[in-house]
Length: 177
Image (cartoon, rainbow, N blue to C red; front, side, top):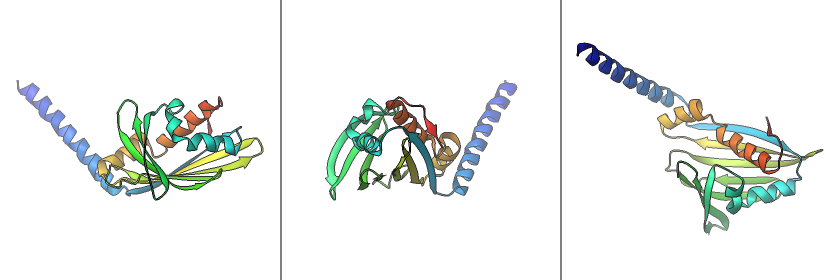
C-alpha cells in the first residue's frame, strides 16, 4: 500500500511540476507574435483571390472549416463565423481590408477569447502564376495557450494547413516557404 501511495503522490507531484513549468514558460513568452508563410501557385492572382474571398464556400476545400455562417456586415465589412471540424470551436472573422487581387486582411474582432489578431494575405504575380503570403499578427493573452501556441501547435501551423489545403484545391503540391 505504501508503494502505491508513493507512486500516486509522485505522479501528482510530477503533474503539478509540469503544469507549473507550462505556466511559468507561458508567462515568460511575449503575448504577441508574428508568423508568416508563402505558397507558390501556378494560378493567376485573380483565380486565387476569387477562391480565398469566397469565405462561404471554404468548407468545400478547407478541411478545418466545418461550416460558415454569414453575419451582418460591420462598417460595410463582411463578417462571418467559422465552425471547425472535430472541436466545434467557433471564430468570428471580419474582412477589414480588401485590395483585389493583391491584399486581404481578416481580423478576429473578439479580443476576449483565448487568442485574437489578424491574417494579412498578399498575392503577387510570378512568372509561373502567383505567390500568396499569409502573415499572422496574433495575441495570446493566456500563458497556458501561449505555451501551447508556441511549442505544441506552432505559430505557423494553421497558416501551413490553410496553404496546403489551398494548394490541394488547385491540384498542386504545397510549395511552402
